[in-house]
Length: 123
Image (cartoon, helix red, strand yellow):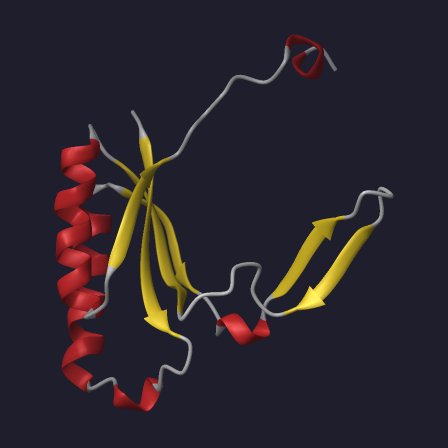
């Protein structure tokens, strides 16, 4: 069955103290619904994008490590779930519920799974 990454985004300067008890209740109820339905494989929240470390391969082969998110944007992923659903329509139905519970915009993307090269499976 296909798997989907469902993400929810918050602005860089998001203030968690603005979250009320109703939002926490709705979000936990949403997670329990996904678990009861057997679609949630894994999920979690992320620390602020300002805490991120980014890696970039340089032309000389070295890897440059910098503080902050890889992408410069005014919103970043704050919460995510890996769902196993029959199709994109089912994943979107769950994401709609999540957008309401999280009170945040989101995105759904199918996880591309490619078989390992033969030589990697022979070890």
